[in-house]
Each structure stands twice: as structure tokens, then as C-alpha cells.
Image (cartoon, rainbow, N blue to C red; front, side, top):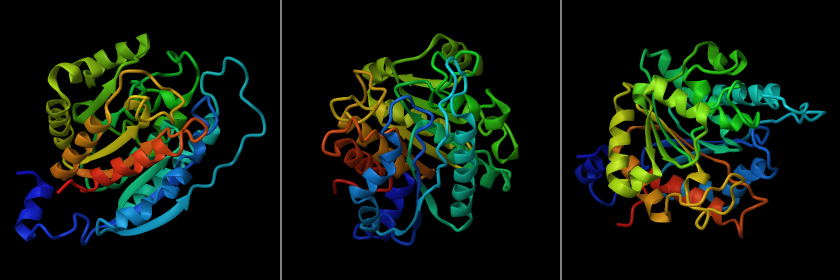
Length: 321
């Protein structure tokens, strides 16, 4: 029986899923890794959608640490730059790694709000650093339409939000791979990627080289989300510490999540996304949660931010009954 369900049945169905647990909200309004303005306001949009109050409604004791301070660059990067805004992204990720590590040291579950997906370099670094002190490797479940496994040598755009998973696996510039003083942060045996439908040639080569488990949209169509998520949880749960969960909203179909700057048709449905998060909650192994790439300039009536909050709640144990 899964961890959360077993606990609820043992202690009674009236117990709230977050009772006795603490959560820490950390905003990382970094938009330097993306090419379209508006993603830096994602954390604010999720707060407007009532994230703190709704997480508290599940029984969690919630602390909101606010947003990281982001220094704006004085000049745009030169044309053809392969690591656009590297220094600004590095500074943001160094800050975020420290904040996430401190939250874990305080016994809190970090809930990270992006910003673009480059911030995962910092959030995962913080989680991995904390558990490295306990000699416990960390796993990962990564929801995304894109592989996010480009390197400076393979990137077609120079946007670092297309590189974070490669960085965390030890591939990329030392300024990013070396955050928290060690690299790689993850073992590919404990990592699963869900929802890919747009992969670059260089990324495909690195995926095959590492043997990283990708559940593409075709496999999800053929096998169903339930089977794929169960397998992904099994893979990530092999890590002794548990696993980090990161969700790029472009993993979802644009019809349900229009507020993304990198939309690709044919993504996860509303219910498939909730099912995935509900199963993660039931499994009970998530160490930290992250939602990124909500672009307020492209959203419609805050729909995508609202959905991001709903999915966080499902991952924290909210259920239909």
C-alpha cells in the first residue's frame, strides 16, 4: 500500500494530508533563461491564486519566504551567445540552492515557484546537497514537453532553460554544474522524464548515452498515464533519499495551460496531470516540489497559474474523497 494512503487509513480518514507537516514556499522569479518576457511573474500569479492559503487548508504549517532577489542585467547578451545571461542565472541558482537546503534543514518541504526552468539547477542542487551530507542520493521526476538536455555545444538558442537537466547530470558549463561544490547532482538511474514531445538531435544523443528513462507522449498514449507514472515513481524511488518533482507547465496541453512561452500541441490532459500528482502524493517519496514556466503575459485569466496551484495541491495529498 502507498505511503500516504496507508497513513490515512491507519490514523483515520478525517486526518488532513498535511497534518503535522511543514512546507516552505520559495519564489524564484528568474526569467533570464527564457526568450519571452512574462515568466518572471509566475510566482506572483500562483500566490494570487491562493497557494499559501490552500496548502494550509490541507493541514500544512506553511511559511512563505517570498521571492529571491534578482539583479537585472544592464545589457542584453551578444548575438549568438551560447549561454545567455549565465551570470544572472548562476546567481539565482546559488541563492535558490541555499534557500532550499535551509528549508530542508528546518524540516520543511520546499515548494519552489518559477520562473523559467533554469531554476531547477538551483532547487535540485539544494536538495542533493542536503542529502549528500547524509550520503543519500536523490531521485527525480521531471515533467516537460522538452528534454531540457542541451549543452552549450548543442543548444540552438543559447537559452539556459533548455539545459538544466543536462547540467544536473554533469554536462555543461562549470559555473552551473559546480553549484554547491559537486557534480553531478543526480544519477540517471534514479531519474525519469515524463511528457516529452519536442527533443533536439543533440539532446537525443545524450539521452541515449546516459540511458535516461523518457516517457514520451507516444508511450503515454499507448500505455496510459497511470502505468507510466507508476514506473517513473518506481525509478525515482530507488534513490535512497527520495525524489524531487519538477513540473514545466508546457508538459500540459496548451488548451489547459495556455500561459507558457514554449507551447507544443498534444500534451498531458488536465486529468492526466492531476492523476500523476495524485499518484506521487500516494507514493509518499517526494522531497520537494517545483512548478515553472508560467508566463503571465500569455496566460488567460490566470488559468495556468490556477492549474499550477491545483497540481501542487494534488501532489501534497488533496484528493477527490
